[in-house]
Length: 139
Length: 139
DNA sequence: AGATTATCTGTAGAGTTGTTCACACGTTAA
DNA sequence: TTAACGTGTGAACAACTCTACAGATAATCT
Image (tube, rainbow over the protein chains, first blue to last red):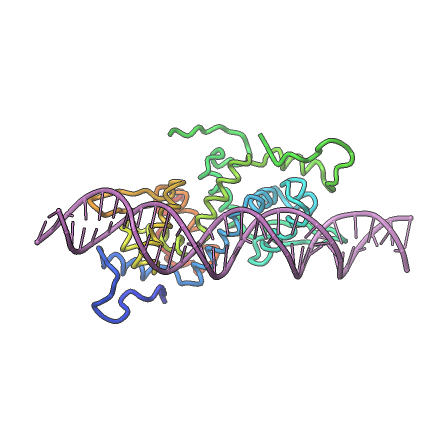
């Protein structure tokens, strides 16, 4: 089930050096499969752009239409549309249409938690993300 | 403290359309600052590469040296070194040196939680995963 | 000393990503 | 119907990122 296959490709002339072979084997056996790792990287990649981060943070407060998201985030409406397209694919956001409006909202609670955790890491207040509670960080 | 400034740049010839101006204002006022958003995007960006994800998942089990990380992840040792350099900057990992060995470990518990949350999001197999986040919140 | 080992760094090329522009699509109003 | 509106899409271009290779650095050993 594990990939990253070439640990011991053929014989003793393997060029890989190992210090703790047991640990390497143990960790390799518990490593998620390639597709899970790739999917994980894709999700994080979607959160790696400031514009998309702002869009998602805005959506934490509830659904919004494209033009309001543009005004909120400072992106162009086309830029917001492109970003939302990327986020729609892996179902990070979902859309509700009403007439010519498109109202977007978060489709996955994990993304909400990822954003909260990330903001905590970055030091933007404690868990209380969107409120100004100075939790000064030493060093 | 909020940026994304050009909501109402000067006058009525503003080209931005608003549907729910109150909501836009409310969300804008709670939006983290540019540097927090940028830092957040950087952190997620570091997690957006399969190689780095594998390195960090390996480090969930404890510290490892570069060559063992290479054997575990399938990356070249140079590639691991490059990846760790990126992760060292924002202090996602830390290094302990002993002789000519360099032992890397996770430097931030948030990253541990981000990885676990992400794996839950993609894998959803709900299994034993990686015994990560044992320091999670009490029941 | 020189050789070997483990890690680190610089660079170049291929590949990817974000932004902007222009226009297309479907909906609503006149 | 035509026009305006909100949104979606494709293409082009700059900017960025990943990977591999070569070499550098520092510690260890003979």
